[in-house]
Length: 627
Image (tube, rainbow, N blue to C red; front, side, top):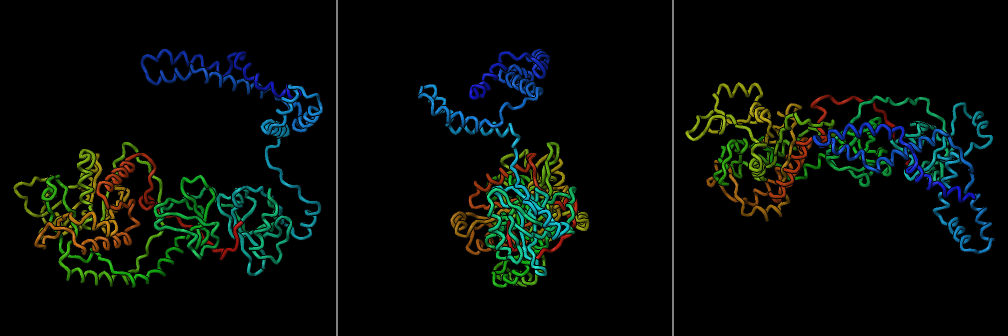
């Protein structure tokens, strides 16, 4: 009889489909369908909506919904709360019955794991047993607590696959085991019952007196279902403010906690790669922050080195630079290279596409002098290398102007070729600035296309007004790229492509331009030898042959210059592209620019809009255990 009652559930769905009258939501569908039907011959959206509303499956779902709501209104109560035990008794009786085919089939049905699971779920629903049951507090515990302490509490947490999310340490003055840190997003944090500074008296009924933190960890595994703590709460606990500003940072270095000997607890740490966006959830500790990867499904925070700690590490490692080969600093090079028409080499002329105002070389003796000066500057440099940059989300609206695209890289790496290919690929979308100069206009040149010809007085006034991104002087004439020329390209609704030295990024590093900085990096020297052994490039005007092939010294200078740029200005780079194969590099650059031009969330420096928040920090000292 009981089995028959259980099997009648499925025919009820068929009755719902065949006999249920239109009511509620189903009744509302009728006028909506009539309204959309009159528009199906004019609007495509109405056709789609009407076809969806007349779908038979949709009507069946709504009818089932109405039947369930009606069933809920009747407030049904279970006929039997112990169907599992009843089925077990019935199975025992069936086994002793005459072995007819029907009896054997019913006994086999009752013996299947699926049917047993169904009955188990039925009993759980009937008894309202939806949550795991915590153990009862043993008799006499409360009286014992009142005798020992006035403010002691029992906390019982149900175990899951993930750790509880807390670190413990031993108080050096009292010898007590205390909670050193609560990891944000972990089980302990979500419970709201355990706080930093709480003293642990017992774990699963075992006293922690005279125990070390390493001896506490095995006690947590003594009960497979839950863990029970006897805790003396810390009196200085304060609830965290719920309206704290969310803090996001972009990382500027790789971090692997397995290779960090100073991490207080490797199990509680979090690895990341350079360029990852992290949400900082706690900066309370001076040395170790708590963070989680933005967009990661794992909400539990992990430990990462704080900005102060990482900067101290870099400062301590800086003397190692004495044992490295010095890098060329372009800031010490002299003489501005004259502009060379790109068509002289490629056969293609694009107005405005010229070499940027880079500082040139003047032979091997000058290079050695440059290296000597760079060596002195590198050893005495006291500028702190950034470790994290605070960023904020930015969503570009379709009506917003495009971001300025900056291409940077050492001479000869292929920045100009990438810029040229971008312009050729879509000249109506990408554009470059028209440089300013004080020299006389030549016969074949056009004002506003090849150059903007201005007077020396006007050029120098713009220099004093900081209106130039880059400028220089060659053969008595000024050349430069002005901010106004960039704004003009952007105002035309185009993407402005600019090739600058990374030291000049600061002039456009504002929310007005929102620059997207791409660093073009050379591959390893073995690949340079293979891919550029026959390539030609335009060298300085002082050379006898202005167009020549790369030498071994050129390759080494390119790599040294790239390393110097990345070490000094790497925190400004949004994307790094290794130009081993120009076709692959161009494809990667084009794909990244399409993403930047889209409406997806992008991360821009917070300094463009607001200042970094101040935080109050405290030191917990070394940690000893992870629970």
